[in-house]
Length: 303
Image 1 (cartoon, rainbow, N blue to C red):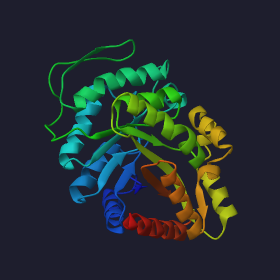
Image 2: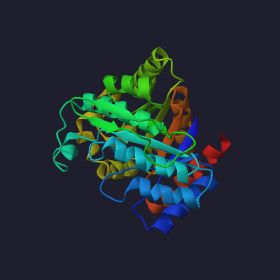
Image 3: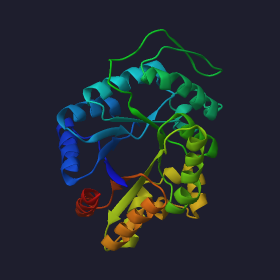
């Protein structure tokens, strides 16, 4: 199982580049950036890829509603060309509170929206023209968009519900999860997406599990800190459903908190569950984050 780590792309760009270089040198195989309120993730990753060689750069994730698939395809293919083929494009639906409350766009029929969006995006990432006239997404693109990259970027979808997992396994390279525990990954996410990929004649899918991790001697204090920092997530329906499946109520319940042995055992459990890549978000005090990063880098270097 590969190990990646998150990037704080809201820092000054020189610090972001330095963080990505440190991750590469520590042994991590990928660096990931989300797209929420801050900087444009793909733009920052283009700079990172230009400055830091070999490491995979990835979005985890870019919400699709604010970007027409032609726009996102052009952006992604541009980063793919700049990075020399090292981009993983992670996309997602976001949440009703964002799509309707912030962007003023209907969140009606999200599964249909994602399916039609992928009908347009996937061939465009391959440099093909498309003519999609869906009920929610329309795209009529008669020539290739973006630069001529040597290959399309890897494409993964933030999929948690069964419909989305089956869609991801059928037409993309896999999924990236968040707020999802080891038992839920083992018993639900991995078998659902693998079954869909197998039925579609596709390779075994990537299952990328994002997880908060803290190396600490004070488990209760670290859990309290994580629950406070990540308090929004249990209030969002899709994440609450994953917490319910795991039998927990808070973010700390699906985080990895504690000793070196605890973290090593949990990383091993992710691999045993069928996770292909763990995406670590070190959390805690400054010293805890540094110690967690160092330990995870050590584990990543071991492969």
